[in-house]
Length: 299
Image 1 (cartoon, rainbow, N blue to C red):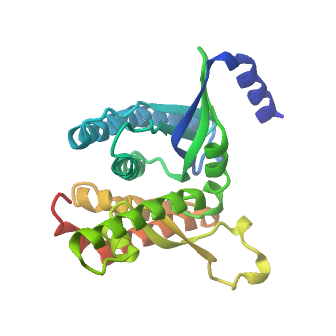
Image 2: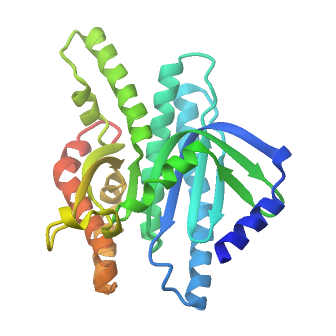
Protein backbone atom coordinates (compact mmCIF):
# COMPACT_ATOMS: atom_id res chain seq x y z
CA UNK A 1 0.00 0.00 0.00
CA UNK A 2 2.84 2.42 0.81
CA UNK A 3 4.36 2.11 -2.67
CA UNK A 4 0.93 2.63 -4.28
CA UNK A 5 0.36 5.76 -2.20
CA UNK A 6 3.79 7.11 -3.18
CA UNK A 7 3.07 6.50 -6.86
CA UNK A 8 -0.27 8.29 -6.54
CA UNK A 9 1.52 11.30 -5.04
CA UNK A 10 4.03 11.32 -7.90
CA UNK A 11 1.22 11.21 -10.46
CA UNK A 12 -0.71 13.96 -8.65
CA UNK A 13 2.34 16.22 -8.55
CA UNK A 14 3.28 15.61 -12.18
CA UNK A 15 2.17 17.86 -15.00
CA UNK A 16 1.68 15.94 -18.23
CA UNK A 17 2.22 19.16 -20.20
CA UNK A 18 5.84 19.17 -18.98
CA UNK A 19 6.63 15.68 -20.28
CA UNK A 20 9.70 15.72 -22.52
CA UNK A 21 10.27 12.81 -24.88
CA UNK A 22 13.92 11.84 -25.17
CA UNK A 23 16.21 9.16 -26.59
CA UNK A 24 19.37 8.14 -24.80
CA UNK A 25 20.89 6.00 -22.09
CA UNK A 26 19.06 4.95 -18.93
CA UNK A 27 20.84 3.51 -15.90
CA UNK A 28 18.76 1.88 -13.16
CA UNK A 29 20.61 1.52 -9.85
CA UNK A 30 19.19 -0.40 -6.89
CA UNK A 31 20.87 0.09 -3.51
CA UNK A 32 21.77 -3.09 -1.63
CA UNK A 33 21.33 -3.59 2.09
CA UNK A 34 18.74 -0.87 2.72
CA UNK A 35 15.79 -3.05 3.67
CA UNK A 36 17.36 -3.90 7.02
CA UNK A 37 18.18 -0.32 8.01
CA UNK A 38 16.67 1.33 11.06
CA UNK A 39 15.50 4.95 11.05
CA UNK A 40 18.86 6.49 11.96
CA UNK A 41 20.72 4.31 9.47
CA UNK A 42 18.15 5.21 6.82
CA UNK A 43 18.80 8.91 7.40
CA UNK A 44 22.52 8.25 7.09
CA UNK A 45 21.94 6.43 3.82
CA UNK A 46 19.96 9.38 2.44
CA UNK A 47 22.80 11.76 3.35
CA UNK A 48 25.41 9.51 1.74
CA UNK A 49 23.28 9.18 -1.37
CA UNK A 50 22.87 12.97 -1.65
CA UNK A 51 26.64 13.49 -1.41
CA UNK A 52 27.18 10.71 -3.92
CA UNK A 53 24.78 12.31 -6.42
CA UNK A 54 26.70 15.58 -6.17
CA UNK A 55 29.79 13.63 -7.21
CA UNK A 56 27.82 11.99 -10.03
CA UNK A 57 27.19 15.42 -11.56
CA UNK A 58 30.90 16.19 -11.27
CA UNK A 59 31.73 12.89 -13.03
CA UNK A 60 29.33 13.83 -15.83
CA UNK A 61 30.97 17.24 -16.19
CA UNK A 62 34.38 15.59 -16.45
CA UNK A 63 33.18 13.27 -19.20
CA UNK A 64 31.43 16.14 -21.00
CA UNK A 65 34.65 18.15 -21.02
CA UNK A 66 36.53 15.26 -22.65
CA UNK A 67 33.69 14.78 -25.15
CA UNK A 68 33.81 18.46 -26.09
CA UNK A 69 37.57 18.27 -26.67
CA UNK A 70 37.28 15.19 -28.89
CA UNK A 71 34.20 16.02 -30.97
CA UNK A 72 33.50 19.70 -30.34
CA UNK A 73 29.98 18.80 -29.18
CA UNK A 74 28.27 19.64 -25.90
CA UNK A 75 26.77 16.75 -23.94
CA UNK A 76 23.35 17.28 -22.33
CA UNK A 77 22.97 17.28 -18.55
CA UNK A 78 21.76 14.25 -16.65
CA UNK A 79 18.21 13.72 -15.45
CA UNK A 80 18.06 11.89 -12.11
CA UNK A 81 14.97 10.46 -10.44
CA UNK A 82 14.85 8.89 -6.97
CA UNK A 83 12.37 6.29 -5.79
CA UNK A 84 12.90 4.85 -2.29
CA UNK A 85 16.40 3.30 -2.47
CA UNK A 86 16.61 3.28 -6.29
CA UNK A 87 18.20 5.82 -8.62
CA UNK A 88 17.29 6.27 -12.28
CA UNK A 89 19.85 8.21 -14.30
CA UNK A 90 19.03 9.20 -17.87
CA UNK A 91 21.33 10.86 -20.36
CA UNK A 92 19.85 12.17 -23.58
CA UNK A 93 21.67 11.53 -26.84
CA UNK A 94 20.70 14.27 -29.33
CA UNK A 95 20.72 13.33 -32.99
CA UNK A 96 24.04 14.54 -34.44
CA UNK A 97 24.08 16.76 -37.53
CA UNK A 98 27.15 15.04 -38.97
CA UNK A 99 29.43 12.01 -38.42
CA UNK A 100 26.52 10.16 -36.81
CA UNK A 101 28.30 6.81 -36.32
CA UNK A 102 31.33 8.47 -34.73
CA UNK A 103 29.06 10.50 -32.48
CA UNK A 104 26.90 7.54 -31.44
CA UNK A 105 29.83 5.38 -30.44
CA UNK A 106 31.57 8.27 -28.71
CA UNK A 107 28.37 8.72 -26.71
CA UNK A 108 28.45 5.02 -25.80
CA UNK A 109 32.05 5.47 -24.66
CA UNK A 110 31.16 8.51 -22.56
CA UNK A 111 28.28 6.58 -20.95
CA UNK A 112 30.53 3.57 -20.30
CA UNK A 113 33.26 5.67 -18.72
CA UNK A 114 30.70 7.58 -16.67
CA UNK A 115 29.36 4.26 -15.39
CA UNK A 116 32.83 3.03 -14.42
CA UNK A 117 33.53 6.18 -12.39
CA UNK A 118 30.07 6.14 -10.81
CA UNK A 119 30.15 2.53 -9.58
CA UNK A 120 33.66 2.89 -8.16
CA UNK A 121 32.79 6.15 -6.43
CA UNK A 122 29.72 4.56 -4.87
CA UNK A 123 31.73 1.66 -3.42
CA UNK A 124 34.31 4.11 -2.11
CA UNK A 125 31.50 5.88 -0.26
CA UNK A 126 30.14 2.62 1.22
CA UNK A 127 27.19 2.55 -1.20
CA UNK A 128 26.56 -0.62 -3.16
CA UNK A 129 24.37 -0.77 -6.26
CA UNK A 130 23.36 -3.45 -8.69
CA UNK A 131 21.85 -2.21 -11.88
CA UNK A 132 21.31 -2.31 -15.61
CA UNK A 133 22.00 0.07 -18.48
CA UNK A 134 19.62 0.42 -21.41
CA UNK A 135 19.25 2.67 -24.42
CA UNK A 136 16.14 3.94 -26.16
CA UNK A 137 13.10 6.16 -25.74
CA UNK A 138 11.89 7.54 -22.43
CA UNK A 139 9.95 10.48 -20.99
CA UNK A 140 11.08 12.98 -18.36
CA UNK A 141 8.65 15.00 -16.26
CA UNK A 142 10.07 17.63 -13.92
CA UNK A 143 7.82 19.30 -11.36
CA UNK A 144 8.52 21.42 -8.30
CA UNK A 145 8.47 18.36 -6.05
CA UNK A 146 10.01 15.55 -8.04
CA UNK A 147 11.48 14.18 -11.24
CA UNK A 148 9.80 11.29 -13.04
CA UNK A 149 11.62 9.24 -15.69
CA UNK A 150 9.50 6.59 -17.36
CA UNK A 151 9.14 4.81 -20.69
CA UNK A 152 10.45 1.84 -22.70
CA UNK A 153 14.16 2.32 -21.88
CA UNK A 154 13.40 2.56 -18.15
CA UNK A 155 11.21 -0.54 -18.29
CA UNK A 156 13.98 -2.39 -20.13
CA UNK A 157 16.55 -1.57 -17.43
CA UNK A 158 14.05 -2.32 -14.65
CA UNK A 159 13.43 -5.79 -16.09
CA UNK A 160 17.07 -6.81 -15.65
CA UNK A 161 18.75 -5.01 -12.74
CA UNK A 162 17.31 -7.35 -10.11
CA UNK A 163 18.22 -10.70 -11.62
CA UNK A 164 21.93 -10.59 -10.69
CA UNK A 165 23.62 -11.31 -7.38
CA UNK A 166 26.45 -8.80 -7.14
CA UNK A 167 27.52 -5.17 -7.10
CA UNK A 168 27.78 -3.86 -10.66
CA UNK A 169 25.85 -2.96 -13.80
CA UNK A 170 24.93 -5.21 -16.70
CA UNK A 171 23.88 -4.32 -20.24
CA UNK A 172 20.31 -5.24 -21.07
CA UNK A 173 20.00 -7.46 -24.16
CA UNK A 174 18.64 -4.42 -26.03
CA UNK A 175 21.66 -2.32 -25.10
CA UNK A 176 24.00 -5.22 -25.89
CA UNK A 177 22.55 -5.61 -29.39
CA UNK A 178 23.21 -1.93 -30.17
CA UNK A 179 26.64 -1.97 -28.53
CA UNK A 180 27.79 -5.00 -30.54
CA UNK A 181 26.33 -3.46 -33.70
CA UNK A 182 28.58 -0.41 -33.21
CA UNK A 183 31.60 -2.63 -32.58
CA UNK A 184 30.84 -4.63 -35.72
CA UNK A 185 30.75 -1.44 -37.81
CA UNK A 186 34.11 -0.41 -36.33
CA UNK A 187 35.59 -3.82 -37.22
CA UNK A 188 34.37 -3.52 -40.81
CA UNK A 189 35.80 -0.04 -41.25
CA UNK A 190 39.14 -0.96 -39.65
CA UNK A 191 39.38 -4.05 -41.86
CA UNK A 192 38.99 -1.89 -44.97
CA UNK A 193 41.15 0.97 -43.70
CA UNK A 194 44.05 -1.19 -42.49
CA UNK A 195 43.74 -4.09 -44.91
CA UNK A 196 43.90 -6.55 -42.02
CA UNK A 197 41.60 -9.46 -41.04
CA UNK A 198 40.01 -7.60 -38.13
CA UNK A 199 36.92 -9.27 -36.64
CA UNK A 200 34.34 -8.09 -34.16
CA UNK A 201 36.04 -10.09 -31.37
CA UNK A 202 39.20 -8.04 -31.90
CA UNK A 203 37.22 -4.84 -31.41
CA UNK A 204 35.38 -6.27 -28.38
CA UNK A 205 38.77 -6.98 -26.80
CA UNK A 206 39.96 -3.48 -27.71
CA UNK A 207 37.07 -1.96 -25.76
CA UNK A 208 37.18 -4.27 -22.75
CA UNK A 209 38.10 -1.22 -20.70
CA UNK A 210 34.44 -0.12 -21.13
CA UNK A 211 32.41 -3.34 -21.03
CA UNK A 212 33.44 -6.96 -20.81
CA UNK A 213 31.60 -10.28 -21.18
CA UNK A 214 31.35 -12.05 -17.84
CA UNK A 215 29.31 -14.94 -16.37
CA UNK A 216 27.37 -13.06 -13.70
CA UNK A 217 25.89 -15.02 -10.77
CA UNK A 218 22.09 -14.81 -10.73
CA UNK A 219 20.09 -14.10 -7.60
CA UNK A 220 18.45 -17.17 -6.09
CA UNK A 221 14.90 -16.01 -6.79
CA UNK A 222 15.70 -15.85 -10.51
CA UNK A 223 17.02 -19.39 -10.71
CA UNK A 224 14.99 -22.51 -11.43
CA UNK A 225 15.66 -24.76 -8.40
CA UNK A 226 15.58 -27.87 -10.58
CA UNK A 227 18.51 -26.58 -12.67
CA UNK A 228 20.70 -25.39 -9.79
CA UNK A 229 23.44 -27.53 -8.32
CA UNK A 230 23.74 -27.69 -4.55
CA UNK A 231 26.45 -25.37 -3.25
CA UNK A 232 27.00 -23.56 -6.57
CA UNK A 233 25.56 -20.43 -8.15
CA UNK A 234 23.85 -20.28 -11.52
CA UNK A 235 25.48 -17.79 -13.89
CA UNK A 236 24.53 -16.05 -17.11
CA UNK A 237 26.82 -14.18 -19.48
CA UNK A 238 26.26 -10.45 -19.87
CA UNK A 239 28.33 -7.57 -21.09
CA UNK A 240 29.02 -5.69 -17.88
CA UNK A 241 30.58 -2.41 -16.83
CA UNK A 242 34.36 -2.64 -16.55
CA UNK A 243 34.38 -0.64 -13.31
CA UNK A 244 37.44 -2.61 -12.06
CA UNK A 245 39.49 -0.41 -14.41
CA UNK A 246 39.04 2.54 -12.05
CA UNK A 247 39.42 0.32 -8.98
CA UNK A 248 42.81 -0.81 -10.28
CA UNK A 249 43.84 2.76 -11.13
CA UNK A 250 43.25 4.11 -7.63
CA UNK A 251 45.06 1.31 -5.81
CA UNK A 252 46.97 1.33 -3.51
CA UNK A 253 45.67 4.76 -2.47
CA UNK A 254 42.17 3.35 -2.07
CA UNK A 255 41.68 -0.43 -2.13
CA UNK A 256 38.25 -1.32 -3.50
CA UNK A 257 39.27 -4.97 -3.05
CA UNK A 258 39.65 -4.43 0.69
CA UNK A 259 36.38 -2.50 0.89
CA UNK A 260 34.47 -5.35 -0.76
CA UNK A 261 36.31 -7.97 1.27
CA UNK A 262 35.51 -6.23 4.55
CA UNK A 263 31.91 -5.69 3.50
CA UNK A 264 31.52 -9.39 2.74
CA UNK A 265 33.02 -10.35 6.11
CA UNK A 266 30.73 -7.98 8.03
CA UNK A 267 27.54 -9.04 6.25
CA UNK A 268 25.15 -11.73 7.44
CA UNK A 269 25.68 -15.02 5.57
CA UNK A 270 22.39 -14.66 3.69
CA UNK A 271 23.55 -11.41 2.06
CA UNK A 272 27.29 -12.05 1.76
CA UNK A 273 27.32 -13.54 -1.74
CA UNK A 274 26.68 -10.21 -3.52
CA UNK A 275 29.92 -8.74 -2.19
CA UNK A 276 31.93 -11.94 -2.60
CA UNK A 277 30.81 -12.19 -6.23
CA UNK A 278 31.87 -8.59 -6.89
CA UNK A 279 35.20 -9.13 -5.16
CA UNK A 280 35.80 -12.17 -7.38
CA UNK A 281 34.87 -10.20 -10.51
CA UNK A 282 37.37 -7.48 -9.59
CA UNK A 283 40.12 -10.05 -9.02
CA UNK A 284 39.28 -11.80 -12.30
CA UNK A 285 39.35 -8.55 -14.26
CA UNK A 286 42.61 -7.48 -12.67
CA UNK A 287 44.24 -10.81 -13.56
CA UNK A 288 42.84 -10.97 -17.10
CA UNK A 289 43.22 -7.43 -18.36
CA UNK A 290 44.88 -4.90 -16.08
CA UNK A 291 48.53 -5.52 -16.97
CA UNK A 292 47.73 -5.27 -20.68
CA UNK A 293 45.52 -2.19 -20.21
CA UNK A 294 48.30 -0.34 -18.38
CA UNK A 295 50.41 -0.53 -21.55
CA UNK A 296 47.78 1.16 -23.71
CA UNK A 297 48.19 4.88 -24.41
CA UNK A 298 45.88 6.97 -22.28
CA UNK A 299 44.87 4.11 -19.99
